[in-house]
Amino acid sequence: MSEIAHQHPAVVERPEQTYVAVRRSVRMDGFAVIADRLPEIFGWLAAQGTAPAGPPFFRFRTVDMAGESDVEAGVPVGSAPAPEGDIAVGTLPAGRYGTLTHHGHPDKLFDAITRLRAWAAEHGLEWEMTAGPDGVEHWGCRVESYLTDPRVEPDMDRWETELAFRLAD
Image (cartoon, rainbow, N blue to C red):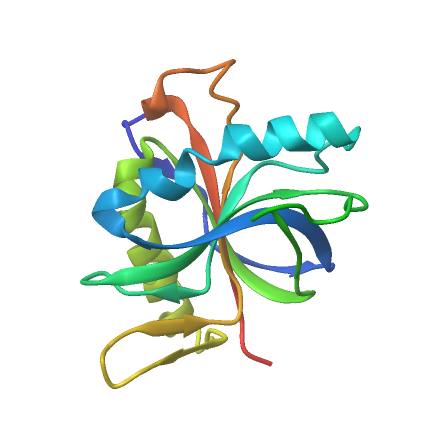
């Protein structure tokens, strides 16, 4: 298998999912500012006695490759404790999502995103997304879920990341 292998894209129906998260405006070259908050969120959940209900993720509310994107670092939960400080509670909306699992280093996700978007265009599928005149994309729900636990597999070239972008109704 090559360093980067991909599962075939698919349309998946997803239920609503409650989560806790921290939200920031970040540049893509400074993404660690938000990514490094995930251990804090896991620690906060443990202190609240709340178990995660799925893998951690990043929700992109806006994407601006040249500027700052509005991003949440989140963890799904069955029921959320009361928000505290800058840890908020949110909900990923139910609906149809275009999905693709990327196998490989997260730095190579751009190729997987490009592939998922091309597949949707080929199949006449539209995203729940609008692009402003400045090129900034505003997404209804665009999520990257990190399926690999870095404590178990520290080699990022072996990680699995699921892309799930909500489709327009």
